[in-house]
Image: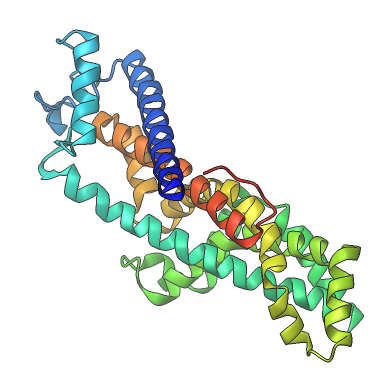
Length: 312
């Protein structure tokens, strides 16, 4: 009974934290947009595209600000998102989730690819018999890890457009060469970062001691590494809560370059056109995604390394 009560309290605490984060994020975004003369989710007088430059893009707020604040928050909670200022036909409650699903697909696949590649590179850098290859892998990890998406994305875009233009010109984001090229591009910095973390962690005296003990007991290298799998993933779990929000922000640039109709490109287009309903919804989704992925990372870290006392 006491355990059930403890679980209920923990779940209630999580929902309370989520609600507080939701209200704070919404309040900040709402009042920033209000200061910019925008009227979030207020498309009762939708402005035609032909009058976008003749009329003021910002909506005239006729309702008192507290009432508008509450009504807009209620509309967001109950998925009454309305339509875009420039498209009064397609409802945002169907349009935005499609873009969100593409973003989540790329995020999940990128995390999996980054973890697998980082493990592969770190193990080569430590255990490969040829010293020149180990040194080359370490230099590659350091070099790639020091370059952000702002630098890597344009360079690879120029190379791809020069030697593989079909990837850039195709309109389908799920075209396999385009899809996997985008995944590799997004995952490169995080592959290097995770590989560096695993390499440093395995080179510590404690990890070497446990590994040598297992090898001395007759286990093969692969069996020994499998026994230490939680220790291999522990340094990644400590950083992945910060890496995923960074990945989402880096993906926005890649979306725009490769013309992927995901959440980031929609958000950039809405900002350029001052389409306030879309700006509010995409900003809230990005904000809530940061909280959700951070909590998942804390949960994962506690499961992988029980020594971490994380209060969920």
